Length: 421
Image 1: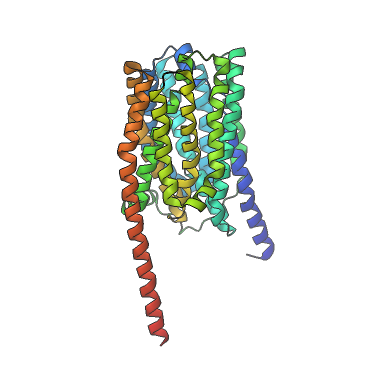
Image 2: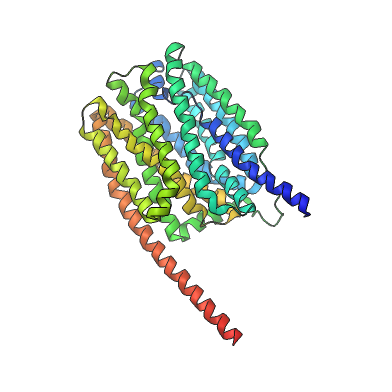
């Protein structure tokens, strides 16, 4: 490759950074964010149990399709996967807006889940590979933190705009507009640059798939942190689903729902921006430990205080959500090879989705039968029961691997000295 071609290639890889920002902003700018649970309750007449049970097949589909679609991204290209994912997402959101029966809503959820599987893993893999191509992979955590903050900012703006828009017009209009915004992400994905791969690089489909799963399972630190991340994500995402019913229960109107939810997203933005500095100063272990501590405290506050102002407890969940993605993604990306990066990141999503498929219906039943405060208590206990033991296992495995790597370097150094003599 001549110098001019190399410069063009580097510029194309650099452009993927701002294109990733724009793509994620559009995909997250969904005006249904502040009203979707209330929409299903009020407009479609569903109970919390029905809403969360509907999420079960959604996440089961993600579990079944996530790794195969990740392998497709590794095999046929991350850009292709992103284009397909954003197109399907727009279709799913539109169906969600017009659905007037439970089966049609299930169809929407199924399409939605498939769309997300084509995006997850592929976006981070393309970004990391672009940075690696120009020698900037060490900046991944900082850039990923900014990306997470931008995503939260996009959601924050959508929350502030979507709720008043729904009150002034209808529940369906913000949802339909969101489908149009998602379509705008398609040409952005098409414009991204992806280096051509030699025919020897991608494995056969099933080989790629099974190798990714095997790599995760055999790598003890990676395996433990992926399960830990899944527990934290389920303990964060599930209680946040009930934020809208919680606010509705304490008399917050539709038009004000966005104002009450906005601080939680703002907390996520701050956490994402500070995640890189937090890890740099406090270390990886302290960063991982902070996630369940924040989450448990937030759930206990919501469980113990019977007042609308207990909604401040959701701020802890926002902080956890903002920190988790850049912290975990950086750790995982630093330990996996490029040719299977999307596949292994998809394995991480499979674990989280599988846990959500179990936790969400449980949360819905508990909320309907025993109340929202009982729900938050259940998730505080669940997080403490599983997150801390998994974190302990990860720490032990990480230390053992570090010692083995240090010993290997010493032996290699000794062999080289002996050869030199």
